[in-house]
Image 1 (tube, one colour):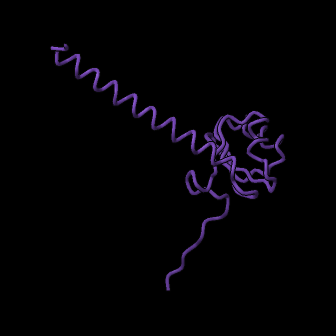
Image 2 (tube, rainbow, N blue to C red):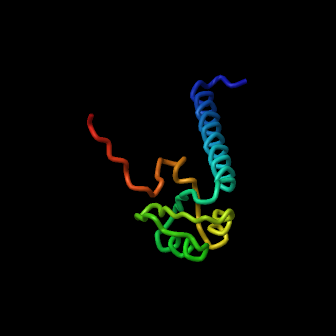
Amino acid sequence: MITDGRLREGLRWGRIAGAIALVIVGWLAVVVTLTFGSAPGKSMAVIGPPSQALAAIAKANGRILASNSYFTIARSDDADFVGRLYAAGALFVLDAEQAGGCSGLPRRRFTAL
């Protein structure tokens, strides 16, 4: 029987941290799995160093749309583009449109009526 309140509090925070980690890992697994089912012609965000991402996109026969120091957005009309990106050395690939609204298209300009 645990009589020390500090020990009980520590166990509680450990379980909370474990549950949060499990949710994050599960969410990432679902996102990566859904990325493989993306339709051809969609924009993909390749997360990682720009030099590695650009090399992977070139090897996978993709078109580079935008790049910065955190991610590179690319597109290809091939159905297996995501698999070829991973095979070419991409660290992490997400559907850019679902990941943060990045489509690689110019921003729409709204005009006042």
